[in-house]
Image (tube, rainbow, N blue to C red; front, side, top):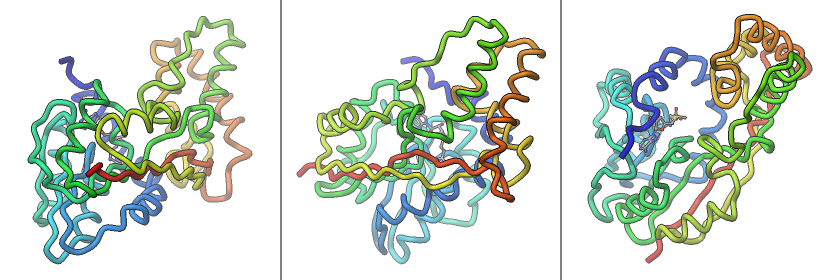
Length: 278
Ligand SMILES: C[S@@+](CC[C@H](N)C(=O)[O-])C[C@H]1O[C@@H](n2cnc3c(N)ncnc32)[C@H](O)[C@@H]1O
């Protein structure tokens, strides 16, 4: 099996900009944790936990008596999580959800904030996660909607794409349903989850405003927007001039969304909930 794209450079880039990402994604945790409804004594698996930002509040939510495992395919992420939350009795696991053996029916809840869209074999991964959850247990995850339905991605993407095309660049567009957006279309994603052993699948559409790059100036937001996702892909391997021009176009596109604190775009994400089939 090919190694995940998250192992190495992509995770290092994520960790280098950690304070920005935390500020950006914090509003996602509110509806995610509300839907998960964690309680004392529960056993939780946080999948694709990254540097443990949601693992730590999950741990606190299940005390007394609960246990939490944070699992991630990237050793860099788990090292960072261990360092950040060294004083807490959280289990950390480096492993690919597609292939890592997990104990059977050992968890009440599988939780994830944007960590379940990158599986090389989604059916195998969601099947393993279902088998690791007790019958009746819950899956609760945040996942991006399709790129055109997520202004957080679509606005910067459209600005950069049209600027590149205006300049005569040859652009092959990345798949609007690929990578981060692989669970964006709910019909196929529900069918996938049900085939993997989950039932009662529901999708809550969220448009909470997220600050691009966290609170800051329009220039900060533009600089952050070109570091991630499809906008990053569009600008990979471009000339300095193309990048400079794209940044100017991006700032113009983001300016109307500046609310005095930062550039706040509707997030356009799902909170998906499901139950482990009996
Ligand atoms: C967008 S980041 C989210 C990190 C974290 N949940 C957060 O909200 O800050 C996606 C995470 O999923 C992890 N990931 C990707 N594919 C995975 C897989 N197959 N198994 C486990 N973790 C995976 C990545 O290494 C990365 O840490």
